[in-house]
Amino acid sequence: MIGEMADAFPPKAITFLRALARNNDRDWFRERRADYDAHLMTPMRAIIERLAHDFRSFAPELMADPKVSLFRPWRDTRFSEDKRPLKTNIAATFPNRTLGRMNGAGLYFEVATTWVWIGGGIYAPDTSQLHAIREHIVEHQARFERILAAPGMAALGGLKGDALTRVPRGWTKDHPAAAHLARKQFLGFREEDAAFATRPDFYAQLTGTMKALVPLINFLNEPLLARNDVAARPRLVEDERTVRKVGGRRR
Image (tube, rainbow, N blue to C red; front, side):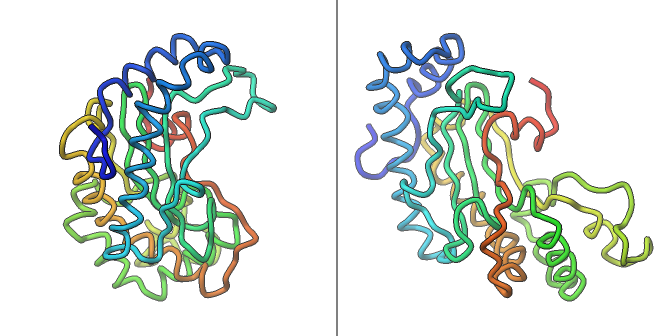
């Protein structure tokens, strides 16, 4: 079904994730690891490898590599009250080649028990990176507005993410870019039901959404690449809990 060029996940991928949500246990998972690999890991790797090829034409700045892009299935429970050992999704991130994984703006998608999330941007820039992005917007506001007004971004509902209640210090409240300067996150995304991942046109929908986001990703990374700030490591969306926060929905 999958072959070398994956178009979608099999329905059994969603079935497995839902069963995992009911049986979030290491032994249960180890006994069914072959099913996880067949229904989730194999198609995900094939999609990442296909993106690596297709990125050459529309996102050469971004990296698609299973060794870099894939998130492991195990949760980090060291500092969490929730001790469930496994994530109930499968996810991949696509960072800028120079800035590296979990730094700067990038693309991300995940398939979970009840939703598919496809998006990108920068989720948690540190203070210096956020200031650099804001300065970049002020200097290139007309171009930034054109990026946001493009049909692809408009179809995604425009720019999203958390914002301050007022314009940050250093800019006046009536600044022409005030709404953008107040932002703490710069994101674009779409959220669909889980069955979306099994549709024959899933890969086409995935790449179409990514193409719409690439101009935003590249704009956000420009000031970070200019200073080559690879030391700071802000987080992209990491798991289904973050998706709930970013998407603003309760489940």
